[in-house]
Image 1 (cartoon, rainbow, N blue to C red):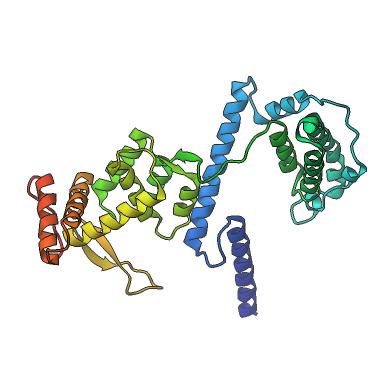
Image 2 (cartoon, rainbow, N blue to C red):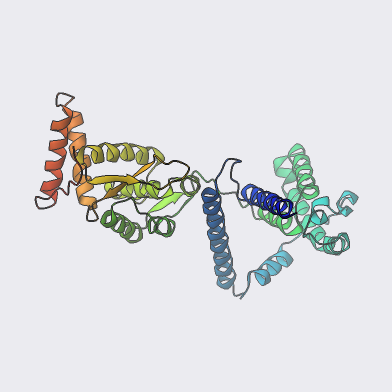
Length: 339
């Protein structure tokens, strides 16, 4: 009996985790760490959205977003009298279907408020029909109804209607830039296999210079199994480029350059990562006072050696990199591993 009860509980936990993973937008193979980071990112995004809503509402003289929202809803004019098609009298299934959803009767009582928003959206379409043409208007009306009947809840659908009326365009995650410092600091403060001093310098640079990152690149980093090292590379690229916005291509180039520089410099030692799933996995433990200036010196020397060709053997390359780092750090290159 105990075994059956345990297995049933385990199955429920696995199903619950699978639901969380899907809701977080992670793939089927995402591990717990990746899912947790995705949930944390969603939580931060929701918190930021709520703060923005409050800021917008207060800038318009309202204490709460709901009050501002209701005021906007009542102020949107109907350009022409609109007769609502009877198809909108049907309550969308996903409003009441599913666990935790309100009852059908509650949704039916909620419907008149949504009808008011639909009329405003239809009025907007009618207003622009003489300009955009009859075919455009019909397509817009069809899309509006499809969005209504397939909507998950009335609030989300009403927001889509307001976006249409106010001509709000969806953000493009590839071109929408957001501040990077907070997310980077949260990730990097837990890192144990990065240069401590350089990490602190990069976080400070991110805050001081207002380093930004696209939403697409942010999502990529936050869901990565190597989040800490990717944030380090992103901030290092911004710092070395003396910029507050860098592209994915620039980060990749600097990451490869840094990797070569570290290999030649040997400012770290290897120890077990203590990963039970990968017992042979090792991690780098750097000299704690490795600085950004020293990393920059090592990278610059690798670039110089590259420009001069491949005539030097690997030991000579390593000696050159170590000498360059020492020159940038008062004669001490902090080499702590065998060549």
